[in-house]
Length: 369
Image (tube, rainbow, N blue to C red; front, side, top):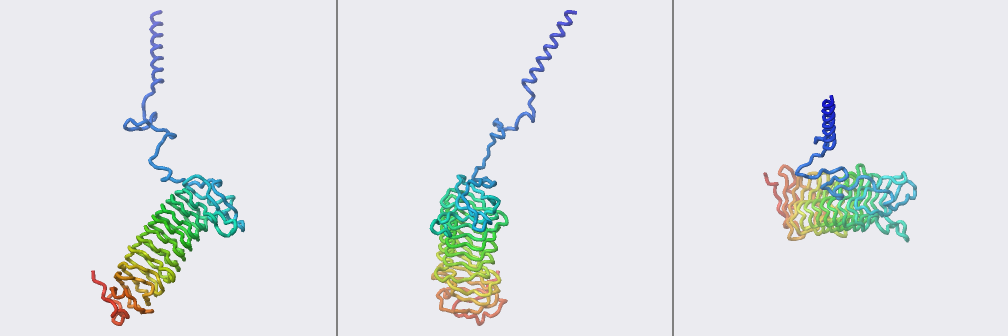
């Protein structure tokens, strides 16, 4: 009997040791560790790393109201932001402050002339990205002036933006593209993008009506300009010294007069000027001034043509392709560039036997492909 009890105690002791060993060394399974490779240490939520940086993933939540100096407008219907005083390089402007919509990035008023701006909202700051809410109607004078680190400005969907004031983006030397297509932009004022040396691409709104004097002056990286059909007026020098521009599309309603300085001047890489269908006359003064070889495409809708919008200086060779009947030539001055011009026309169109320029330059059918 004593032997039996001793054997039983030994067996119980052995079983208890085995159970303790299992608790100290739990089995390895898919639920107990993270899946790792190459001996890498698994990361926890707090330790997780990413290949992306803050610059690549700017915040989407609005900055705190304390990041802005602001005031309620005079009719108590909206907020004017005067100055960004935050430290973040990535800014999301709130759409509402004190339950009122943010309607203007106005800037700091001049003490002596309150209707004028002394300093832009972000002027001279180190901001890199800015998201502007749909409530904003106006980007104020010098708003982003000299923001040389600014690379991105984004407008939210259904933006109410209507006006970009003078010098708003002047000398934003890191900005490469800007897209106004989601806005209701009507006017870009003088010098607005002057000196944006890396600006390659701009997409205009379908509501744009006016581009001010020298608005894109000295933007040497800009490659193409496709004006919207809504555009009516472009002032002198607006695209002067945009030395990389290769092609320009001119809409039907655009006024072609620039009395003081050509709209396109100092554009040595310009190759093609295409007038959009719907324009009935090409008349004006000082639209283009260049001495490089140019191809112009004239739509079938054009009935009248003047040489005065074009200052094509020797040794420029001008090729003009007419897609419709021979137009009436008005204001037919003696222009030197006609001597080196080549005019192509559709052989199925009419009026070329009596075309006013047929004895001043080479006029011939479009070559068959």
